[in-house]
Image (cartoon, rainbow, N blue to C red; front, side):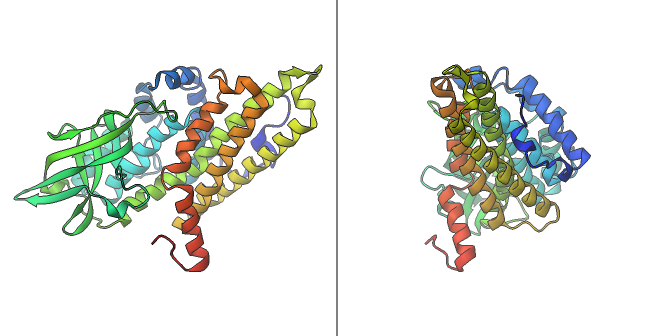
Length: 388
């Protein structure tokens, strides 16, 4: 590209610290080297190179915003910028990292016993162990309170039975954080995946997030010691607080996919000639690019503001809903619009835009659908809950 990069229009670099810019640059280099040259092939084959997990651990990306236990302890904005760069490669890569750090690791770090933390977190931070997070069920996505997975006490053990669905990393994980109904409400359990009765069949035939492992978790009489329960939380506030951690990363991450689409469209339009002129010289093309760059920059300012609130310990769940609703929705719109600029070339894996668009269809739905976030915001505005 010969013009100004889309996220440089407002000159926001001075809003980031030198350390934050270094984190973004390091992850961008990693993605350029280890993801972008291979992602089209991974996507087409419906798989991902799990060697990325160890490499992400070596870079300090796994649980990077957590303190201790081998975690990097960065601030929230640095974590968000890392998510943005990872998702510029592919939403599946960012999902792998965010499920590991913001769901599985965060649950153990926030609510686990010291023994659970020492047992699992160092290996997960290093990328030697992969984790997954079992909350969603086949019939209970937006309403996790209705989950049917059950944990019962039997002597000195817990016995878990149930099914979880759409679980990232499930088939390749060594540890699963599973949420289940108990006589004392919803509780979280740390489940080694080698435990008898636990299985995680891979979900195939996906048209989105193909470069990501998505699984079903099946628990049939899974017996765990009494200390397998996360001791420091009960009720839905446990899993929902983990989801807020993951949603925060998505607020930044979706912008990475949108930025990659927009940069691709600008580059393509500058080299594609039509009627003896570059496509970028036409007014309609420039109008599309201008509108998309505007929404991308607005989304970045929103994400950065939420990151600063999080670092000040002032970020509220409803504010995260604002960020996810806006940024994923606009990122998907940008990806679709960029496809129109590329024309027929836009539907091929030679270019990333339709791959990003397909992935963003999943991002729009997971960690809370757009409708759920609209209702969270609506309740904040009116004081009335429309969930039931």
